Image (cartoon, rainbow, N blue to C red; front, side, top):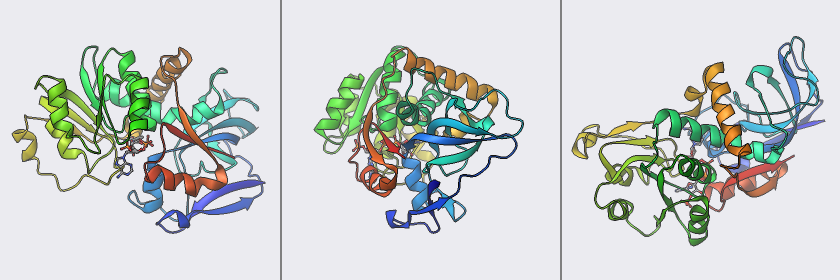
Length: 324
Ligand code: NDP
């Protein structure tokens, strides 16, 4: 049997429901995967609440890893038993099994467990796209990373350090500060009580930073702009504290001819070439131990609602994995 989460209205975690069905048969070009681990992402909460509206009823979750148990007609390049992971398209990863198009899959290296693959690929691919192809961070740059002890945060800090950047991270607690420091942050700002921009200017001798990576959104937007050096770039890539809206573009001129981009991973992984090159880079970072992916907590798949509550309450660190 297959067990899967779905929701038929947007709202709190009470909207998450469960269904049990017979195992489906994959169609042409598809495979049936038995999940070993499912990655939790903040975007899952946006889908649930309707911040990012989806057609209802809908499955939940973008990312999982496991092994192929049935091949559909015409699938080449994969065999039954192969270990694979995916990060979309379409919602429905919160399930014991799932039918996916073979074109959406990434082969998982033998040394990478399902848990690590599910904890890593969406967040590390986001990091790869934003750091290397969006902001093009260079060795010696000093950059600011918000929520540095979060899922994307711990990965991004290590990635930036591997490139030779100096990293200033923000966190909301002492424990998170220790984790951000262990990941490589050169400076940690406690943005629960410290002034972000003032501290950034202290650290950089008044210069500000050329790049800010901001997945927190509403609460940090102004401070992120104020932390930039003239002509700096704000990569505003998420809404953990709420969406940034109502921006007066003139503010970018006033604060130093700044650049802002609001990227999404999927535009950086749009073509087969981008997907192959980006994921090769992700696996290389993991397999070569330049990137150590922290699974801060695991939950039984059936406890996905609790995992959402903890993520939204800022109680998690690193990546979170659901186990079927
Ligand atoms: P995290 O594990 O980073 O969790 C979010 C963190 O944000 C919290 O732990 C917390 O850290 C911080 N935070 C600050 N304010 C709030 C608040 N009001 N409520 C909740 N959390 C808050 O999540 P993910 O790693 O899954 O994602 C990080 C961000 O990256 C999200 O905004 C997500 O949407 C975005 N993202 C964007 C992608 C894209 O393609 N654009 C792809 C992947 C992720 P602290 O307690 O230290 O403040």
